[in-house]
View (cartoon, rainbow, N blue to C red):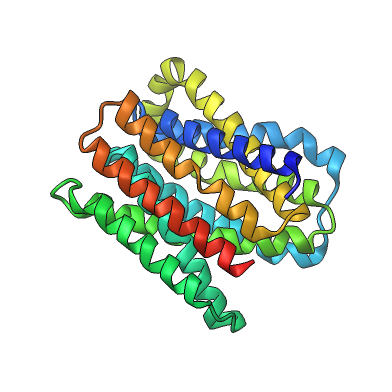
Length: 278
C-alpha cells in the first residue's frame, strides 16, 4: 500500500469514529443523523453535474447499497439512543468483516485459511468481552449486531459497485446523493416538530458530522479502487479503537478499560482476517 493510500485510509478512520461520536454525544441521534444524511445529499447534489453517471452495471449495486444503508441508519440511531458508543460501535464494526468472509465463502466459494478462521474466533472473543459487561438489557447488543449485518451488506455492494462503475467519483457522488435524503425525509415526516426545534442547536455538529461522513467513506471507496480491498478494510477498522477511546475517555462511559481492551482484540482480529484474505 502506498504512503498516500495509507494516510488517506487512516484519516478516514479518524473521521468515521469522530462523526459517530458527534451523533452519540448529546441530543436525539435520530435527529442528528437525519441532518448528517441531508448534509451529504446537499453536498453531493452539485457534484452530479460534474462527474456524470456510473456505468449501468454498477446501478444494481448502488441501489442495493442505498437500501442497506437505510437499514444501517435505523439500527445505528436506535443503538446510540439506548447504548454506549464504546459498546455499540466496536460490536457493529467488528462483526461485519466475519460476515463478509462468510458471505464470500457461501456465494463465491472463497475458503479461509487456518489463520483466517483463527481471526474470526478472535473477533468473536472481542465482541463477547465487549458485550459481557454491557447494559443489562440485550437491546443495545441486538441493535449493534443488526448494524454490523447492514455494514457487511453495503460493504459488499459498494466494493463490487465501485469496481463496476468505470468512474469511482461518479459512484461516490450518486451514492451520497441517493443515500442521504430517505432517512432524513422519514425523520422529518415522523418527528417534524422535534426536528424543527432541534435544528437551531444541533445543526452545527450534525452538519460537521455529515461532511466528515461523506469525506471519510468517499476516501475509503477511492482507496478500494486503487489498493487491495483487504488492506484498506484492515486499516479502516482502526476506527474501532478510536471510537472506544472517545467513548471511554471523553464521554465518561462505564467499563472503559474492559471495552477498550476488547476493542483492541477486535481490531487485531479484523486485521488478521483481512490480511489472511489478501
